[in-house]
Image (tube, rainbow, N blue to C red; front, top):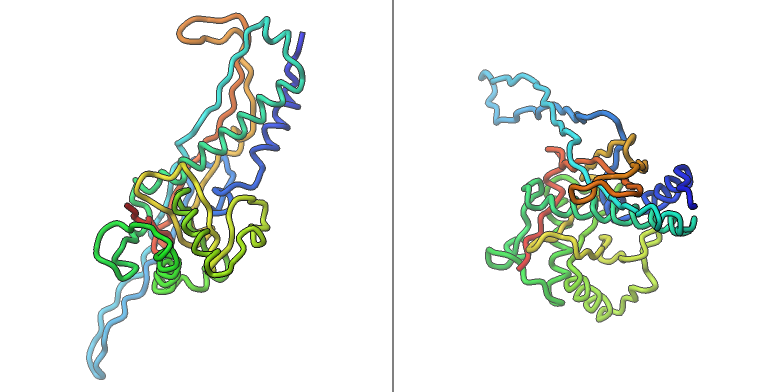
Length: 284
């Protein structure tokens, strides 16, 4: 009878979870068992015109506590009948662990891109690329305008130094990514020769930004801005762990077998000071 080696299962799970992913490239990731993350900041000084010989008004410096509670999560659950368990091989269990790691990474990516609906980022629409107000219709003729507009907005938000340190990005829908590739090729740029060299196989650098594709992005949205400006806190004690349950409940009834589950607990946050360099690109 096959026996699940918990240590081997978790090693394989953690190997998959440790892979470089889009959400790890884009976000600043903090693994912690602290439930509430704090990012306090001081209010800015007030600057006003001053006439010699006249009084002025002073404003007290205040500390604002920007914080987020790590309370979201995803769980990958599988169950195996006891007879099937006896017929499984070690490689079968490693495949299950690998699959759970893939699915959890994809769940985190989906959660990152779904943040568009929470209004955490700065809106970027057609007016930002000198068009009429409304959502952008992405085409080969305006992908360069979107890239240039994002960089301009970052500079206008005093984020140029941050952009130089961390780099910038855009996550496109697959159809938009195809248009970007076509535009880049038309300019004589070979995307295959300039694939990202930081562990992400899908994507390329062009126009001063790194470009990714995802079919998990919310309808009507793209995501762009400065890398590492978006924050995700992950509970480190549940990340990469496997729990085995004997004779679990399945659809309200107990089965003869085992249950295997792995989970991630996380929360995304755009700190107040970072919102101006993170963009919800509104598209048709």
